[in-house]
Length: 126
Length: 364
Image (cartoon, rainbow over the protein chains, first blue to last red):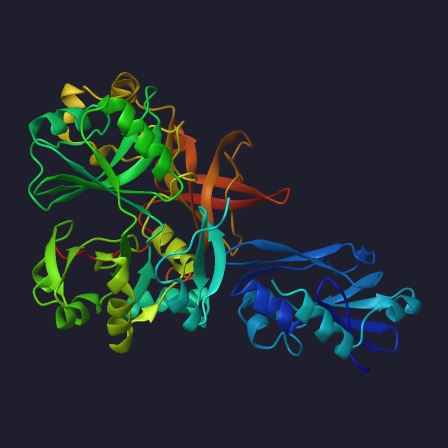
């Protein structure tokens, strides 16, 4: 897999060929608190960069998940729907959200590197 | 408006609190652990809550004060015992609720605990009703902390001897390092516990002595999940100026004598709600799956009619599932009634449920 790229909406993307795996960042889970509900897009759905592609809810509030890139949903992670708390434990690993067949690879260039994202996240805390 | 801080603010900071603005105060929403962890610790051990943002009002007076207070508070203040606390309200002309409160008989009159967001307005309402008689004192010098959980009693007994023999909704003065404090056996979590009214200048010392005995600090986040599991109302959400105590299913809190005699603000509407059944009722609601139905969510009947809406909803850590409260048309208020909640445009199965969601026996 490629190095992860990051969005301003606190999602990460990991690319393998034409396929991208997407999740939310550790920083996002720390901001959200205990995740108690996950709603993922349906397989086959076409999603558009920065469009809404799911929901995560903490005890406090519901938050939309946005897709950082355009494409077709080809797989979703049902294990986190059954056990939403897993997202807090391993958000940038096993608790990925969905996989997308990438439509336009150039969109990836607009995303941040790990170092840039860490800086962005730090500046945007509180 | 500048956000206010409680006397424990710096102590919260030292305990790694995450703050949120609440009713004009900077309050901890949680500490270094998560809301769910703090919730579970309160249910299994003991948790300490800073609730100093709440109003602590003292009014001195005798029989004429009882008469004056009974005109705005629908509980039996003639027969309340010394050091006994009662859950009640300030009602408006239409039978709605200005605020819910705890009223307590003390030596020189009454102490009333008010919600932070309402306390200033409450004082105006009470002053108006008194027409210049009686002095109101809203204590800025006092903090209020709550110690809640199955281990609360044993731990507190070690610090303030004699507290473990207090009965539920009863209190009295105790001494801590030579300073007078007032402790009642009460709370807002569904657990056994105590609420401690204590001078600002000694509250941190007292809190530290509890933490040293293994008590964990708990924020407003867990306070909300705990009270919802316990089926307790949050003012401004589950009750407000347009809900009557009868609609809110809080008839039990209006003393029998007051139900019969009336003589308080809004009695006409409250009496009519008691006789002819209210048009709607506050109920518990349990979604079938994992979906969380939050405040404002529409409640639908099985034949797709809107029958009410959710006033509080979250995930209940001890129930291990979503829980909610809301108002439904009276005919749909029976426990077990199948309903739907409409979340983000989709309908999800749910049912009307008994309150509380989580049961624990209080020490009486």
